Image (cartoon, rainbow over all chains, first blue to last red; front, side):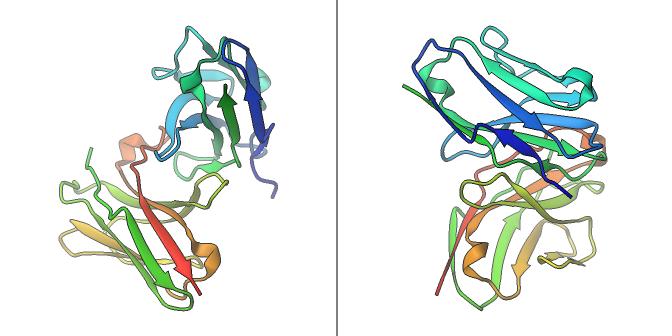
Amino acid sequence: EAGVAQSPRYKIIEKRQSVAFWCNPISGHATLYWYQQILGQGPKLLIQFQNNGVVDDSQLPKDRFSAERLKGVDSTLKIQPAKLEDSAVYLCASSPTLDTQYFGPGTRLTVL
Amino acid sequence: DAKTTQPPSMDCAEGRAANLPCNHSTISGNEYVYWYRQIHSQGPQYIIHGLKNNETNEMASLIITEDRKSSTLILPHATLRDTAVYYCIVRSPRQAGTALIFGKGTTLSVSS
């Protein structure tokens, strides 16, 4: 079974630029999560989708972050414009049930 | 929701058992104990979970004390590839389908 795929693995941008991350969850998984992990901390939820609907985006900085999950499969997370404090690893996870979550390798973003 | 306390770091010799403790003294009767780990440059990986009975799978064993106020994750024969950050998470059934809440975890270093 293929795991959660994410791209790119690394991205370096200047502040105020925009960036997009892509996630392909495990086939058949209805629930998809985006987490942000700042160095030295545990991952924290940004947004959760159930199929193509948003379940929880309470911690998403909506003035600069946006996410979509078209057709309930792939998802993209965008930051525009990026700030220095957005430097982090962005993790995508999917879940087939209400229990175990499967994580991708993450995208490491550096904002200069 | 019950909070967890884990030591920030532990060391273990390769081939020996690694015993990672977690304190969750405020756990309620229907809350489960979950363990995830995160190897460097990878996303978190589910290890095991339990309610009150001891659990074992191909990766590890989970020992929960009778009063359920603490638990221990046991890696019976640690290898260098077990070097990772280990997260102990307490979740209730009503949190099923919601984001995981990570603390700082325990950094386990396995050396030869």
